[in-house]
Length: 114
Image 1 (cartoon, rainbow, N blue to C red):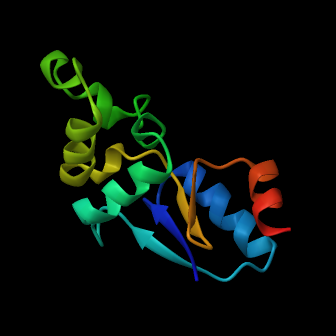
Image 2 (image 1 turned 30 degrees about the horizontal axis):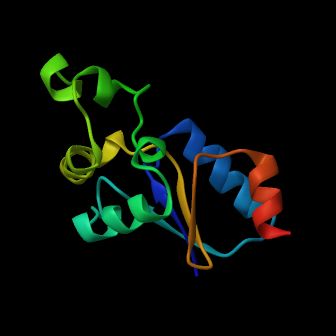
C-alpha cells in the first residue's frame, strides 16, 4: 500500500494527493499531526534519505525555533525534533514499495508510478 504522510491543509500535500487521485493511485493518507509518528519510523526514513532532506527548514515551524535549537543540528537532534514537532517534516513523504520519496514534483511521481 502506498502511504502519503503530511498535513492535510498543506498546499503541496493537496497537489500531491490531487496528482495521485487523477492517476488512480490507491493510497492511504497519514496526517503526521493527528496520527503522529514514532521515532522508529522517522529513524527508518533517515536511513533511506539524508535527514537534511526530511527537515523542512523553510517553514514556520523551523523559523519559530530559537537560534540555539537550530545551531548545530545533527541527525540525532533532527530526528528528535521531527518526532516532537512533526510539522517540521518536509511534505509530503511518500512510501511506495518500501522506498520513500520526499517532496512533490509531478515528474518524480510519473517516474515512480509509471
